[in-house]
Image (tube, rainbow, N blue to C red):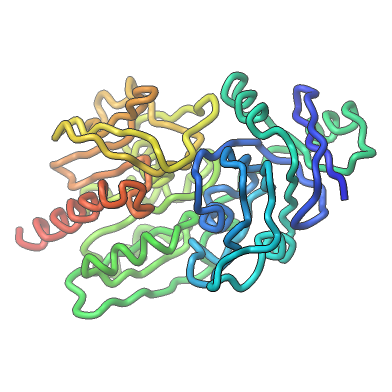
Length: 360
């Protein structure tokens, strides 16, 4: 079955369908990873986004039950050059197309993804529609403009109730605010001796503090950080009372809670090959990233936050810290192991902050 991709500027691509055959209007972005498509489609941070994979061959190792980042498969669409529907992997339990079809996510293959990625890089992220080949360019653009931009992504992917992840011989209790959290973050906290209580994004600060955690973690997630006002309000009450650690969206929410500002990047950072400099040590880390927004460095004055990491590709802020209030955050994903262990020390810093407060 043929499908058509139409961008809001009127450019269009014709390709072949896989996954669900539904129409979808969403923001189009690209990812430069050469592997990990299962982790990408099961990462809630991609909610409502059509992801273009710059690596050409996708689907060749299928889907395995152990490799999900969450059980939520919520990207707007998946766009690839060559889709393989006959995986070669003894661990696979279903194909990528079957996974997308089960979750209502359309896919399109056979288009010039090099051209499309360059278009996104040069002109920026835009909205797009995946639809049938009979839909005219004018009609597709009109449907894009008539479809409202969603602002409730975090509420759709956050946990609906509290849940627990326990480890053997725990030393610390961490409350994790779930804005669309990847499960490998919970696993990393467990490997560092933490029992984790995961709570929905709209949990009150008083309820979190009543659990008497050693620290509070703020997760990654989709959308504009300024839309997540419940978490910003909670962090304003918690920062200074408990050590706080944030990743990706959590990093942005910490900045907003302290009085800084965020802004949208031209085409965002997505992939497992971004060099980041730790300005405190001078070390360079190879990082995995997935975000559309960044913290405005000029707005940090008076917030108490200092820059700890900088992206070497565009000099955007990649990390923040406040020694006095025991706050640390990073824009990238240390749990994704792109280095593969370049950034694991960040979990150790969070542990050190919790230990220091306990010993006071």
